[in-house]
Image (tube, rainbow, N blue to C red; front, side):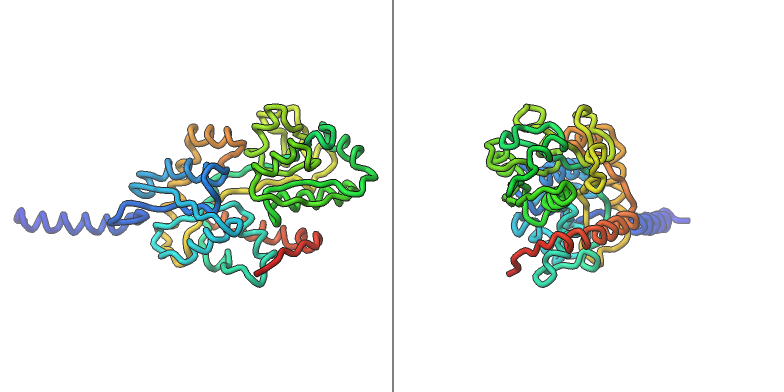
Length: 327
């Protein structure tokens, strides 16, 4: 075989091997975007930045964060739905936008989580906590809080947004405890916790990543956590289940999604990169500092989890009677 023929054959084999490999996210441009539906500094943005650091070089040469805040995270979902299905635009979102909002905004929601997106992988899972402030004399347990609230005409409680998981946790708790509680929605956890500390609300439900610093600093009392077991950083705080409220056991996830019609090799490449990141001690430690844990899943298993969580929230929302204003 001549050297020219050998080189031609070698080039052809190399091209075939390259085509057989899963495509990188943005061939030719080298940059992928993770779209986040919330401002910088919050738990979604922080998680996205942890993910981006670990996807650089494994999924795409460069990964940047784009904060597309608005409509309680819905604008980000809409942006990824409309993006080219080439794997270059990734959505990182809390579960609520895909599991709760379809039940709430049946007339106005402009995306379908099952047909407009492809579930790729969770980025992590986090529990919730119930913080109690000075208005309730900082009741240190659910029993003490219920005793304080018995007979009161109205007990104000806060959450980061109407229609969020913490909002409906408060609804469930009030019903199970026999208390009259009024939901006060805020634009994020930070102002809700500030009002809790100031005594404008009696209690507040939030992701532990948001409550933990204030509980550790003694500004609020952590009365219960939604995890199945007590949290390592708060071993003295009992779970909701331990205190007689097993229906409040649960968590939420941040998930990675791609636009519908994204080629399967690209979906698998992103899932594989996320699985490799989840197995590293530094990523696990970074999540632990946020009161989160990795939740590696295949795309199929994650899609099944999405459907199960969506189905779970339907009757809870219907029973609550909550109906948001739809434009």
